[in-house]
Image (cartoon, rainbow, N blue to C red):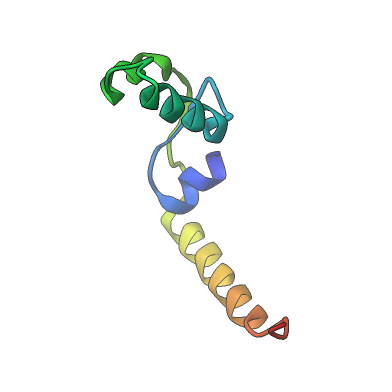
Length: 82
């Protein structure tokens, strides 16, 4: 998460419940059957575990992003369409 915050240059928040896909599906199902009246009620279910602040130097960030772009460019067309 720290690396993501550094590369994106934005804070990243990790919730206590990290299975957000399953939680999201459960919340939508609960809304559908009337367990919760609206999404605002679900906000109480979310809790912050840790917040990651960007700390990487801008030059290092730019270098890593350039390398990533080069890697993506090199693998384009790697696999043949099936």
